[in-house]
Length: 241
Image (cartoon, rainbow, N blue to C red; front, side, top):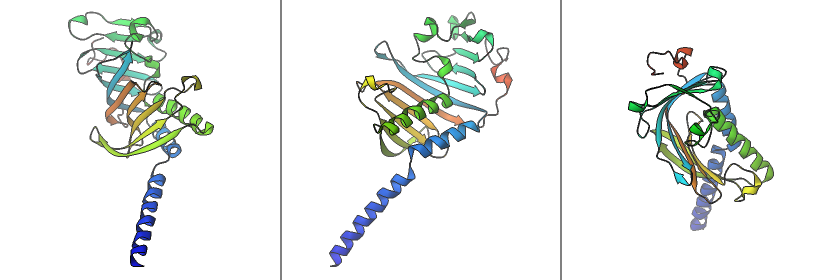
C-alpha cells in the first residue's frame, strides 16, 4: 500500500511540474509582453551579433555596436573584424532615405550614400536596413506564430533555461511545416528569450533543408538608453562621416 501511495505521489508531482512548466511559458503571452516592452522603449543600444547564409555560404560573424531610436533611426559601428571601423547611419526621411556609410581603416577615405536595397548593400545582407531592429523582429515572429497557431501547424518546444551573454534566458524552438510552399518565413527557429526583459536576445533561423541561414544576437541590451538626435547626427564628432 505504502509503495502505491509513494508511486502515486511521484506521478502527481511529475504532472504538477509539467503543468507548471506549461503555465510558465505561453507564446501568445510572451509576444504580448515583448510588444508592450518595446512600445514603451524610445531608444536602445546593444552589441549586435550577425551571421547569415549568403550565396550558399555562412558568413563570418559580424560584431556591431548598435543604436536605435524611434521613429526609425539607426547607427551602427563594427567593432570586430572582418569590418572593424565601418560605420553606417540611417534616418528614415533624411538623406533621401539613403544609408550614410564609411569603411574602417585605409578603405575609409570617403563617406558614401547607399541605396538600402541596392546591390552594394544587399550582397552582404539578407535584409535591408529598413528591416532592422527588435520591433521588426518581434512583429515578424508574431505574424508567423499567430498564423501557424490559427492553422494548427505550429509546434513549440520548450528547451529549458540557458545563460546567453550573461543573461538568464528561456530557450524555445518554433517549428513550422517543412514545406516552403506554405509561405512561412522558415522551417524552424530557435530563440533565447530574456527572462527579465521579455525580449529575444538570440535567434537562429533554419530553412526548409534545416540549414542555418540567420544567426542574430543582442548582447548588453539597454532598453532605456536615453539616446538623443545627436546620436544620429552625421556631424557628431564621435563619428567619421
